[in-house]
Every structure is written in structure tokens, then in C-alpha cells.
Image 1 (cartoon, one colour):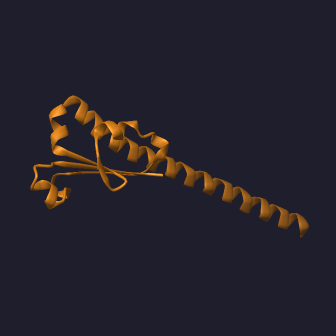
Image 2: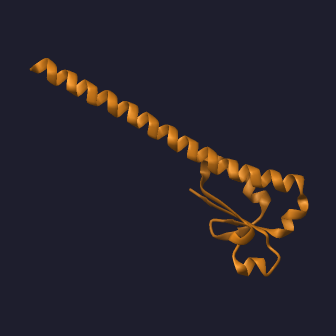
Image 3: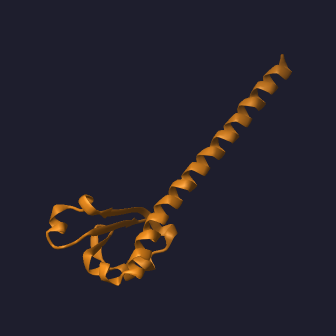
Length: 106
């Protein structure tokens, strides 16, 4: 009976280890996607500088610049959102803004 309990406990422990490993992998994939979104937006601005005048950068709910955005370390970013097209709020579209990059830091 004792050996059966040890086997059951060992099996549960192994299943818990494999489950926590898959959660870590999913979190890492999500973080990469968020950073790739920001990297894509920044590359688009490097290749087409005229977009800078049509973009608003918001860092921690305050309007900022692309230069200050580039200075933020990836590990300090908590949230990244890039809005384009119809997703951009009407108040920005009235002023000719076509893209909003919003970042929150830790």
C-alpha cells in the first residue's frame, strides 16, 4: 500500500512539473508577440520618416516621442498597444493621426 501511495504522489508531481513548464512557454510566446508588434511599428517609421507626423506615442498615459519610446528597455515594458486605421480614436483622426502607439512601463 505504501509503495502505491509513493507511485501516485510521484505521478502527480511529474504531471505538475510538465504543466508548469507549458505555462512558462506560453507566457514567453506572448511577450515575444508584444515586442514584435512594437519592433514592427518602429521599423515602419525608420523606413518611412513621414509617418512620424501622423503618429502619437503615449507612454504611461502621457504624450511622448518615438525617441523616448526607443530608450525604454524591453524588460521595463508592461503593456504595448499599436492602433492603426479605424482603431484610432476619432479625436486623433480629426487631426490627421493615423497611428497610436501606447506603452505602459513597470
